[in-house]
Length: 274
Image 1 (cartoon, rainbow, N blue to C red):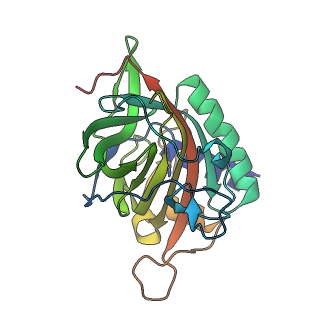
Image 2 (image 1 turned 60 degrees about the vertical axis):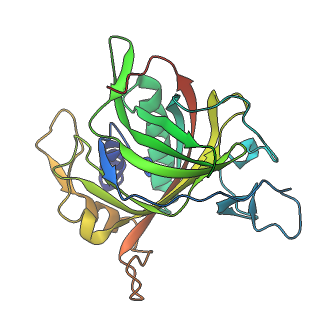
């Protein structure tokens, strides 16, 4: 159907990444957070465990694509500081609409394979005393065989324990894809996952946040590269498929749509942060 095709293409054009994460996103910043140490890994079969491998954003018993790649009691033998990772797979799990997700994930995989969707994680530093790291996350570009940022990346603070990492508290991310007329705000975004033991891969990452109706309203999405002047309002598109399901201001009424997904990444050595 035309409406489903429009919705799918517009969400791909947004490239979260997050959503969150979409296509060629240009994140411009995030609220800062105070990072703390995360809990240690635990046996996934233990009756008293409350999360998967000690990752607080993954409650015990949760069923998400990619959790089979999680390693218990893991450690990182090589420091990830200074490394950059290119997202090589992305699976969106919400908005909760099976038909939409099926088409969206197929398109997303195609865009990643063709280089139309370039999302980069760059590990800036690590405080060994507190076990925290600062990372930059954003969309990128490939020019002359060198990856670089496409716009300003977002700053996220992670707590790291063994190979596990997770945001110490949710962050508000502002995204500004070229396909929209103004930045998109993602609210209360949590990220958690693992590094491989040799720090060359991100075998599993989970992202969960929301897009408020107020922030989506007025965001005009150019959904057809052959007709860039044809745009559709993001809030109207989301409303045509899913109801508001998240209360971000605590007034008891839903005012946002949940946005969740998983991703994997591989280290790239041809990255320039300048």
